[in-house]
Image 1 (cartoon, rainbow, N blue to C red):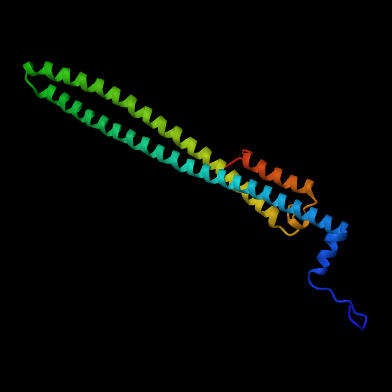
Image 2 (cartoon, rainbow, N blue to C red):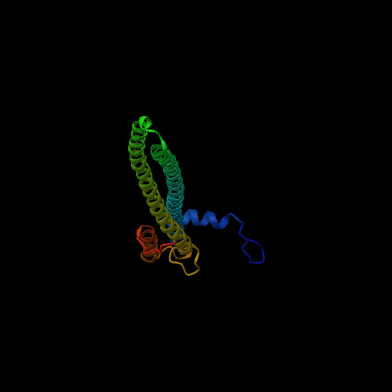
Length: 199
């Protein structure tokens, strides 16, 4: 205290008084800060999970699409092989018509062999095409899930950042409203929204 009646506090005196005598308001503030910190950590964890799942489903979609392309290529190879056998069969049929009697039996056996080989090749090609379609469908499903996870992540980020947000640190006491936002984000990740054929 100075001689003119002014009482001057040092920068730390105020904190020492609160520590010594306690202050209900200070305790409320510290409790609220702890809640905000905990809530921020929970929301950040949920956001990280949403982001991870979005990335994982997108990566799976790409891998499955790659598998579909591989199977499609294998099927195309089989169809090319089928076509080469058809050409050989056609040439054998032509040779059968043009050859003398002694060679006809040879060309008939060749035609029969090519027909059998073509039937086997066709079965393999159709199996590979079916596998390609399965991988395509799995890829589309994963991409659909990726979109839901991306929507959930975006919703969660908007819920945190929007000025009157029930999840913003300024309104940390509004847990029910924030819980609704989080539930909506979670539901949007898992809800099967109708999609168009092309997107």
